[in-house]
Length: 122
Image 1 (cartoon, one colour):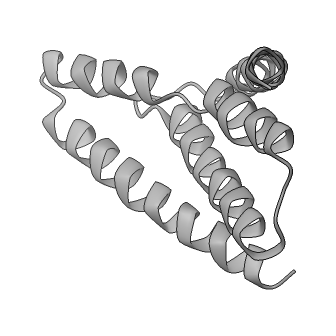
Image 2 (tube, rainbow, N blue to C red):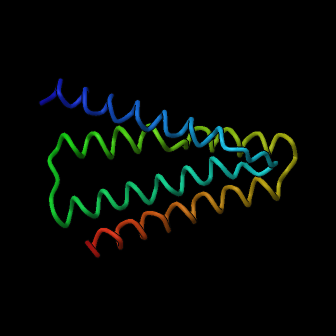
Image 3 (cartoon, rainbow, N blue to C red):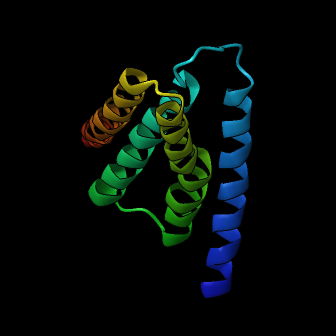
């Protein structure tokens, strides 16, 4: 399973990265990094839903690796979030930086909770 696991994570990661790139192409140019925030919130919802569904109904390990580690890991952009928050601070955009950090953490936690709730409703 070990080598097979790498294949499932790699395939899922490629899909997640392509989806993230597709979202980044949406025409939305503002000082506030709304697309990265949206990606992180959607990714939080998705991983919450997957974890909740797996806990409730069970899920084969290869599928969990593909979805959670691969797709969600390739799709969400926490490193990009961190860089953008830092850049806002460097640009002395303190309010936007604080807003971005609070929204990212708060909304992603809410996304996890919503995903878990949605999975319970299956």
